[in-house]
Image (cartoon, rainbow, N blue to C red):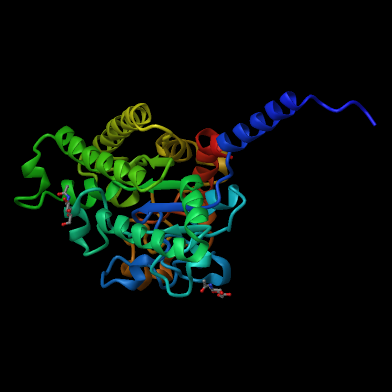
Length: 355
Ligand SMILES: *[C@@H]1O[C@H](CO)[C@@H](O)[C@H](O)[C@H]1NC(C)=O
Ligand SMILES: *[C@@H]1O[C@H](CO)[C@@H](O)[C@H](O)[C@H]1NC(C)=O
Protein backbone atom coordinates (compact mmCIF):
# COMPACT_ATOMS: atom_id res chain seq x y z
CA UNK A 1 0.00 0.00 0.00
CA UNK A 2 1.28 3.49 -0.92
CA UNK A 3 1.65 6.32 1.49
CA UNK A 4 -1.59 8.03 2.45
CA UNK A 5 -2.10 11.63 1.41
CA UNK A 6 -1.88 14.13 4.25
CA UNK A 7 -5.32 15.05 5.53
CA UNK A 8 -4.86 18.72 4.68
CA UNK A 9 -4.11 17.86 1.04
CA UNK A 10 -7.13 15.56 0.89
CA UNK A 11 -9.35 18.34 2.22
CA UNK A 12 -7.94 20.72 -0.33
CA UNK A 13 -8.67 18.28 -3.16
CA UNK A 14 -12.18 17.73 -1.85
CA UNK A 15 -12.77 21.47 -1.68
CA UNK A 16 -11.47 21.95 -5.23
CA UNK A 17 -13.80 19.22 -6.48
CA UNK A 18 -16.78 20.74 -4.70
CA UNK A 19 -15.99 24.15 -6.17
CA UNK A 20 -15.77 22.69 -9.66
CA UNK A 21 -19.11 20.97 -9.20
CA UNK A 22 -20.64 24.18 -7.90
CA UNK A 23 -19.42 26.22 -10.87
CA UNK A 24 -20.30 23.59 -13.44
CA UNK A 25 -23.53 22.20 -11.99
CA UNK A 26 -25.21 20.39 -14.82
CA UNK A 27 -28.39 21.88 -16.24
CA UNK A 28 -31.21 19.62 -14.95
CA UNK A 29 -34.04 21.43 -16.78
CA UNK A 30 -34.74 24.03 -19.45
CA UNK A 31 -37.47 26.53 -18.55
CA UNK A 32 -38.82 28.72 -21.34
CA UNK A 33 -40.73 32.01 -21.65
CA UNK A 34 -41.74 33.77 -24.84
CA UNK A 35 -43.82 33.80 -28.02
CA UNK A 36 -44.53 31.48 -30.98
CA UNK A 37 -40.81 30.94 -31.53
CA UNK A 38 -40.85 28.81 -28.35
CA UNK A 39 -44.53 27.91 -27.72
CA UNK A 40 -45.10 24.15 -27.80
CA UNK A 41 -48.91 24.35 -27.63
CA UNK A 42 -50.00 26.52 -24.66
CA UNK A 43 -52.33 28.43 -26.99
CA UNK A 44 -54.29 25.21 -27.67
CA UNK A 45 -55.70 25.62 -24.17
CA UNK A 46 -56.73 29.29 -24.25
CA UNK A 47 -59.37 30.97 -26.42
CA UNK A 48 -57.36 32.58 -29.23
CA UNK A 49 -57.05 32.23 -32.99
CA UNK A 50 -53.23 32.24 -32.70
CA UNK A 51 -53.01 28.46 -33.07
CA UNK A 52 -51.27 25.81 -35.11
CA UNK A 53 -52.57 22.49 -33.72
CA UNK A 54 -53.76 21.24 -37.10
CA UNK A 55 -52.21 20.01 -40.33
CA UNK A 56 -49.98 20.79 -42.12
CA UNK A 57 -48.23 22.03 -38.93
CA UNK A 58 -46.21 19.27 -37.30
CA UNK A 59 -46.14 17.05 -40.36
CA UNK A 60 -42.40 16.34 -39.76
CA UNK A 61 -42.81 16.06 -35.96
CA UNK A 62 -42.81 12.60 -34.32
CA UNK A 63 -45.98 10.87 -35.50
CA UNK A 64 -46.77 13.83 -37.78
CA UNK A 65 -48.43 15.44 -34.78
CA UNK A 66 -49.56 19.08 -34.87
CA UNK A 67 -48.69 20.03 -31.30
CA UNK A 68 -49.17 23.77 -31.50
CA UNK A 69 -45.54 24.43 -32.43
CA UNK A 70 -45.48 26.96 -35.28
CA UNK A 71 -43.33 24.80 -37.53
CA UNK A 72 -43.31 21.58 -39.51
CA UNK A 73 -41.36 19.92 -36.71
CA UNK A 74 -39.36 20.83 -33.65
CA UNK A 75 -38.51 24.35 -32.49
CA UNK A 76 -35.10 25.68 -31.39
CA UNK A 77 -35.63 25.10 -27.64
CA UNK A 78 -36.42 21.42 -28.32
CA UNK A 79 -33.02 21.02 -29.99
CA UNK A 80 -31.34 22.93 -27.15
CA UNK A 81 -32.93 20.65 -24.52
CA UNK A 82 -31.62 17.64 -26.45
CA UNK A 83 -28.14 19.18 -26.69
CA UNK A 84 -28.10 19.39 -22.86
CA UNK A 85 -28.81 15.66 -22.68
CA UNK A 86 -32.42 16.26 -21.68
CA UNK A 87 -35.59 15.28 -23.56
CA UNK A 88 -35.82 15.96 -27.31
CA UNK A 89 -38.92 18.12 -26.83
CA UNK A 90 -40.03 20.62 -24.18
CA UNK A 91 -43.76 20.31 -23.34
CA UNK A 92 -46.25 23.16 -22.93
CA UNK A 93 -47.20 23.92 -19.32
CA UNK A 94 -50.95 24.05 -20.06
CA UNK A 95 -51.00 20.69 -21.86
CA UNK A 96 -52.84 18.18 -19.61
CA UNK A 97 -51.05 15.28 -21.35
CA UNK A 98 -48.00 16.18 -19.23
CA UNK A 99 -47.51 16.43 -15.48
CA UNK A 100 -44.98 17.77 -13.01
CA UNK A 101 -42.66 14.76 -13.51
CA UNK A 102 -42.31 15.82 -17.16
CA UNK A 103 -42.06 19.53 -16.37
CA UNK A 104 -39.27 18.84 -13.86
CA UNK A 105 -36.86 18.43 -16.80
CA UNK A 106 -38.28 21.07 -19.10
CA UNK A 107 -41.32 23.27 -19.54
CA UNK A 108 -42.43 26.16 -21.71
CA UNK A 109 -44.80 28.91 -20.59
CA UNK A 110 -44.59 30.61 -23.99
CA UNK A 111 -47.64 31.81 -25.90
CA UNK A 112 -47.74 32.52 -29.62
CA UNK A 113 -48.55 36.15 -30.35
CA UNK A 114 -47.28 37.55 -27.07
CA UNK A 115 -44.50 40.05 -26.42
CA UNK A 116 -42.89 42.15 -23.71
CA UNK A 117 -45.75 44.65 -23.99
CA UNK A 118 -49.19 43.88 -22.48
CA UNK A 119 -50.74 45.66 -25.48
CA UNK A 120 -49.17 43.05 -27.78
CA UNK A 121 -50.69 40.04 -26.02
CA UNK A 122 -54.04 41.88 -26.11
CA UNK A 123 -54.05 41.92 -29.94
CA UNK A 124 -54.77 38.17 -30.21
CA UNK A 125 -55.90 37.56 -26.60
CA UNK A 126 -52.89 35.45 -25.71
CA UNK A 127 -50.90 35.01 -22.49
CA UNK A 128 -49.14 38.20 -21.41
CA UNK A 129 -45.58 37.97 -20.09
CA UNK A 130 -46.62 38.76 -16.50
CA UNK A 131 -49.00 35.80 -16.62
CA UNK A 132 -46.29 33.48 -17.95
CA UNK A 133 -44.39 34.44 -14.79
CA UNK A 134 -47.46 33.71 -12.67
CA UNK A 135 -47.60 30.22 -14.21
CA UNK A 136 -43.92 29.83 -13.38
CA UNK A 137 -44.65 30.64 -9.71
CA UNK A 138 -47.40 28.01 -9.71
CA UNK A 139 -44.89 25.58 -11.26
CA UNK A 140 -42.42 26.27 -8.44
CA UNK A 141 -45.08 25.36 -5.88
CA UNK A 142 -45.91 22.11 -7.69
CA UNK A 143 -42.24 21.26 -8.08
CA UNK A 144 -41.59 21.75 -4.35
CA UNK A 145 -44.40 19.42 -3.40
CA UNK A 146 -43.24 16.91 -6.02
CA UNK A 147 -39.50 16.85 -5.16
CA UNK A 148 -39.38 18.37 -1.70
CA UNK A 149 -38.24 21.92 -1.06
CA UNK A 150 -34.43 21.49 -0.99
CA UNK A 151 -34.25 19.45 -4.21
CA UNK A 152 -36.73 21.70 -5.98
CA UNK A 153 -34.84 24.84 -5.00
CA UNK A 154 -31.57 23.31 -6.17
CA UNK A 155 -33.15 22.38 -9.50
CA UNK A 156 -34.61 25.87 -9.93
CA UNK A 157 -31.18 27.40 -9.27
CA UNK A 158 -29.33 25.05 -11.66
CA UNK A 159 -31.91 25.14 -14.48
CA UNK A 160 -31.34 27.06 -17.68
CA UNK A 161 -33.98 29.72 -18.28
CA UNK A 162 -34.58 30.89 -21.83
CA UNK A 163 -36.61 33.80 -23.19
CA UNK A 164 -37.55 34.51 -26.80
CA UNK A 165 -39.92 37.34 -27.72
CA UNK A 166 -40.16 40.87 -29.09
CA UNK A 167 -40.93 40.34 -32.77
CA UNK A 168 -44.68 40.66 -32.17
CA UNK A 169 -44.21 43.89 -30.21
CA UNK A 170 -42.95 45.48 -33.42
CA UNK A 171 -44.75 43.62 -36.20
CA UNK A 172 -48.13 42.82 -34.61
CA UNK A 173 -48.34 45.93 -32.49
CA UNK A 174 -46.09 48.97 -33.07
CA UNK A 175 -45.95 48.88 -36.88
CA UNK A 176 -49.65 48.15 -37.34
CA UNK A 177 -50.10 51.84 -36.44
CA UNK A 178 -53.36 51.36 -34.55
CA UNK A 179 -54.82 54.83 -33.86
CA UNK A 180 -53.98 55.78 -30.26
CA UNK A 181 -51.66 52.77 -30.11
CA UNK A 182 -48.00 52.45 -29.25
CA UNK A 183 -46.76 54.20 -32.42
CA UNK A 184 -48.65 57.36 -31.48
CA UNK A 185 -47.50 57.09 -27.85
CA UNK A 186 -43.89 56.53 -28.92
CA UNK A 187 -43.43 58.31 -32.28
CA UNK A 188 -39.73 57.47 -32.07
CA UNK A 189 -39.21 53.71 -32.30
CA UNK A 190 -36.11 54.06 -30.10
CA UNK A 191 -38.36 55.18 -27.24
CA UNK A 192 -40.57 52.14 -27.75
CA UNK A 193 -37.48 49.94 -27.68
CA UNK A 194 -36.52 51.47 -24.33
CA UNK A 195 -40.05 50.85 -23.06
CA UNK A 196 -39.78 47.16 -24.04
CA UNK A 197 -36.27 46.81 -22.64
CA UNK A 198 -37.55 48.28 -19.35
CA UNK A 199 -40.24 45.57 -19.19
CA UNK A 200 -37.59 42.97 -20.04
CA UNK A 201 -35.41 44.25 -17.21
CA UNK A 202 -38.26 44.07 -14.70
CA UNK A 203 -39.01 40.53 -15.85
CA UNK A 204 -35.39 39.38 -15.52
CA UNK A 205 -35.09 40.91 -12.05
CA UNK A 206 -38.25 39.12 -10.93
CA UNK A 207 -37.02 35.84 -12.38
CA UNK A 208 -33.72 36.26 -10.53
CA UNK A 209 -35.62 37.10 -7.35
CA UNK A 210 -37.50 33.81 -7.74
CA UNK A 211 -34.25 31.86 -7.85
CA UNK A 212 -33.15 31.77 -11.51
CA UNK A 213 -29.41 32.19 -12.09
CA UNK A 214 -28.57 30.92 -15.59
CA UNK A 215 -30.63 32.91 -18.04
CA UNK A 216 -30.43 33.14 -21.82
CA UNK A 217 -32.11 36.25 -23.19
CA UNK A 218 -33.13 35.62 -26.80
CA UNK A 219 -32.66 38.36 -29.37
CA UNK A 220 -34.70 39.26 -32.42
CA UNK A 221 -34.26 37.55 -35.80
CA UNK A 222 -33.94 39.60 -39.03
CA UNK A 223 -37.69 40.24 -38.82
CA UNK A 224 -37.77 42.31 -42.01
CA UNK A 225 -36.95 39.14 -43.97
CA UNK A 226 -40.01 37.19 -42.89
CA UNK A 227 -42.04 36.30 -46.00
CA UNK A 228 -45.06 38.24 -44.69
CA UNK A 229 -43.02 41.41 -44.31
CA UNK A 230 -41.38 40.91 -47.70
CA UNK A 231 -44.82 40.55 -49.31
CA UNK A 232 -45.89 43.85 -47.77
CA UNK A 233 -42.65 45.63 -48.63
CA UNK A 234 -43.83 48.84 -50.23
CA UNK A 235 -40.34 50.33 -50.44
CA UNK A 236 -38.81 47.97 -52.99
CA UNK A 237 -42.01 46.30 -54.19
CA UNK A 238 -39.72 43.40 -55.10
CA UNK A 239 -40.32 41.31 -51.99
CA UNK A 240 -36.93 42.27 -50.64
CA UNK A 241 -36.25 42.30 -46.87
CA UNK A 242 -37.65 45.35 -45.08
CA UNK A 243 -34.34 46.92 -44.08
CA UNK A 244 -35.89 49.35 -41.58
CA UNK A 245 -37.31 46.41 -39.57
CA UNK A 246 -33.96 44.63 -39.65
CA UNK A 247 -32.26 47.79 -38.41
CA UNK A 248 -34.68 47.95 -35.47
CA UNK A 249 -33.91 44.30 -34.66
CA UNK A 250 -30.16 44.99 -34.62
CA UNK A 251 -30.67 48.09 -32.49
CA UNK A 252 -32.95 46.31 -30.00
CA UNK A 253 -30.55 43.36 -29.76
CA UNK A 254 -27.78 45.80 -28.87
CA UNK A 255 -29.88 47.26 -26.06
CA UNK A 256 -30.79 43.82 -24.70
CA UNK A 257 -27.17 42.67 -24.78
CA UNK A 258 -26.15 45.76 -22.77
CA UNK A 259 -28.96 45.01 -20.33
CA UNK A 260 -27.63 41.49 -19.72
CA UNK A 261 -24.16 42.93 -19.02
CA UNK A 262 -25.59 45.47 -16.59
CA UNK A 263 -27.61 42.84 -14.71
CA UNK A 264 -24.63 40.48 -14.44
CA UNK A 265 -22.76 43.31 -12.73
CA UNK A 266 -25.57 43.98 -10.28
CA UNK A 267 -27.05 40.60 -9.40
CA UNK A 268 -24.71 38.32 -7.43
CA UNK A 269 -24.39 34.84 -8.91
CA UNK A 270 -26.36 35.72 -12.05
CA UNK A 271 -25.08 34.30 -15.33
CA UNK A 272 -27.21 36.04 -17.91
CA UNK A 273 -26.24 35.57 -21.54
CA UNK A 274 -27.58 37.09 -24.73
CA UNK A 275 -28.47 34.58 -27.44
CA UNK A 276 -28.52 36.40 -30.74
CA UNK A 277 -30.15 34.55 -33.65
CA UNK A 278 -29.88 37.56 -35.99
CA UNK A 279 -26.65 36.94 -37.87
CA UNK A 280 -27.00 33.15 -37.90
CA UNK A 281 -30.38 33.49 -39.54
CA UNK A 282 -29.31 36.23 -41.93
CA UNK A 283 -26.41 33.97 -42.91
CA UNK A 284 -28.86 31.26 -43.95
CA UNK A 285 -30.96 33.77 -45.90
CA UNK A 286 -27.90 35.20 -47.69
CA UNK A 287 -26.14 31.89 -48.44
CA UNK A 288 -28.82 29.18 -48.24
CA UNK A 289 -26.87 26.71 -50.40
CA UNK A 290 -24.30 26.34 -47.60
CA UNK A 291 -27.08 24.65 -45.64
CA UNK A 292 -28.70 22.73 -48.47
CA UNK A 293 -31.56 25.21 -48.53
CA UNK A 294 -32.83 26.75 -51.77
CA UNK A 295 -35.85 28.95 -50.97
CA UNK A 296 -35.48 32.01 -48.74
CA UNK A 297 -38.13 34.58 -49.61
CA UNK A 298 -41.30 32.52 -49.64
CA UNK A 299 -42.45 29.96 -47.08
CA UNK A 300 -43.27 26.30 -47.58
CA UNK A 301 -46.85 26.45 -46.40
CA UNK A 302 -49.57 27.48 -48.90
CA UNK A 303 -48.51 30.27 -51.30
CA UNK A 304 -45.73 31.10 -48.84
CA UNK A 305 -46.41 34.82 -49.03
CA UNK A 306 -49.06 35.60 -46.41
CA UNK A 307 -50.38 32.51 -44.71
CA UNK A 308 -49.91 31.36 -41.15
CA UNK A 309 -52.15 29.62 -38.61
CA UNK A 310 -55.62 28.76 -39.95
CA UNK A 311 -54.90 30.40 -43.34
CA UNK A 312 -51.99 28.02 -43.77
CA UNK A 313 -54.25 25.03 -43.12
CA UNK A 314 -57.02 26.24 -45.43
CA UNK A 315 -54.81 26.52 -48.49
CA UNK A 316 -52.44 23.71 -47.61
CA UNK A 317 -52.88 22.00 -50.98
CA UNK A 318 -50.26 24.46 -52.27
CA UNK A 319 -47.82 23.53 -49.51
CA UNK A 320 -44.33 22.43 -50.60
CA UNK A 321 -43.35 18.78 -50.39
CA UNK A 322 -39.92 19.14 -48.75
CA UNK A 323 -39.77 21.79 -46.02
CA UNK A 324 -36.03 21.20 -45.57
CA UNK A 325 -35.46 23.21 -48.77
CA UNK A 326 -37.02 26.30 -47.16
CA UNK A 327 -35.87 28.80 -44.52
CA UNK A 328 -39.47 29.54 -43.55
CA UNK A 329 -42.29 27.15 -42.85
CA UNK A 330 -45.11 29.71 -42.84
CA UNK A 331 -45.03 33.43 -43.60
CA UNK A 332 -43.80 34.22 -40.07
CA UNK A 333 -41.99 31.13 -38.72
CA UNK A 334 -38.88 29.11 -39.61
CA UNK A 335 -38.82 25.48 -40.67
CA UNK A 336 -37.56 22.77 -38.33
CA UNK A 337 -34.36 22.77 -40.37
CA UNK A 338 -33.74 26.48 -39.73
CA UNK A 339 -34.64 26.01 -36.05
CA UNK A 340 -32.02 23.28 -35.77
CA UNK A 341 -29.29 25.38 -37.41
CA UNK A 342 -30.04 28.33 -35.10
CA UNK A 343 -30.16 26.06 -32.03
CA UNK A 344 -26.78 24.52 -32.91
CA UNK A 345 -25.32 27.98 -33.40
CA UNK A 346 -26.59 29.27 -30.06
CA UNK A 347 -25.42 26.16 -28.20
CA UNK A 348 -21.97 26.38 -29.77
CA UNK A 349 -21.47 30.14 -29.35
CA UNK A 350 -23.38 31.03 -26.19
CA UNK A 351 -24.78 28.16 -24.12
CA UNK A 352 -21.74 25.88 -24.11
CA UNK A 353 -20.53 27.52 -20.89
CA UNK A 354 -23.46 25.93 -19.06
CA UNK A 355 -22.61 22.38 -20.18
C1 LIG B 1 -46.96 11.61 -14.45
O1 LIG B 1 -47.46 10.77 -15.49
C2 LIG B 1 -46.78 9.52 -15.61
C3 LIG B 1 -47.42 8.76 -16.75
O2 LIG B 1 -47.64 9.56 -17.86
C4 LIG B 1 -46.89 8.73 -14.32
O3 LIG B 1 -46.12 7.56 -14.44
C5 LIG B 1 -46.37 9.59 -13.16
O4 LIG B 1 -46.59 8.89 -11.95
C6 LIG B 1 -47.08 10.93 -13.11
N1 LIG B 1 -46.45 11.73 -12.07
C7 LIG B 1 -47.13 12.46 -11.18
C8 LIG B 1 -46.33 13.20 -10.17
O5 LIG B 1 -48.35 12.54 -11.22
C1 LIG C 1 -49.07 44.62 -17.54
O1 LIG C 1 -50.24 44.19 -16.89
C2 LIG C 1 -50.04 43.72 -15.56
C3 LIG C 1 -51.34 43.14 -15.02
O2 LIG C 1 -52.38 44.04 -15.17
C4 LIG C 1 -49.52 44.86 -14.70
O3 LIG C 1 -49.24 44.38 -13.39
C5 LIG C 1 -48.23 45.39 -15.31
O4 LIG C 1 -47.79 46.53 -14.60
C6 LIG C 1 -48.46 45.79 -16.77
N1 LIG C 1 -47.19 46.16 -17.34
C7 LIG C 1 -46.94 47.36 -17.86
C8 LIG C 1 -45.58 47.64 -18.35
O5 LIG C 1 -47.79 48.22 -17.95
